[in-house]
Length: 42
Image (cartoon, rainbow, N blue to C red; front, side, top):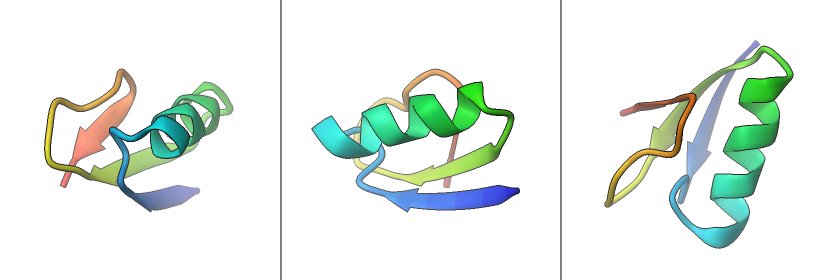
């Protein structure tokens, strides 16, 4: 599943992105800093 997460480099968003990516989802993050591993920057 493709998932868009806003605030992907924040405390909750970063953890959510990592968990979704580890479960095989395609994660796209809207963020203002460096992207967490497994996240495509939008």
